Length: 104
Image (cartoon, rainbow, N blue to C red):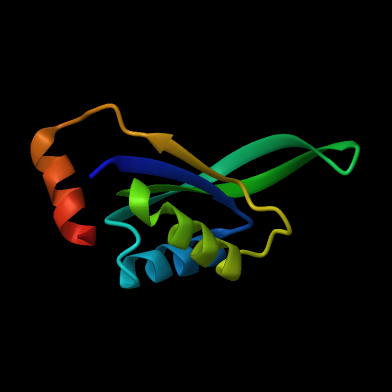
């Protein structure tokens, strides 16, 4: 079972909490950390933009990624939300086992 960390930026705290709770309730994530006060700079529709956002750090399993992406897209306010999955190279074994058990 390959684990992954998924990064998702959100427009605000309310949206971030709604997405986090939805993923946890559907067992698509074992843990979701919410990091506030993220300042993002990005190019969108030919212009450079700046936004204050909230970052979700989602711990999940790679096989759940398609459902996780579909779920985030359904709950997210952005036309093209940032959803980036990073493969987990390793970590503290008891924590990784807990992630697996929580979403298994």
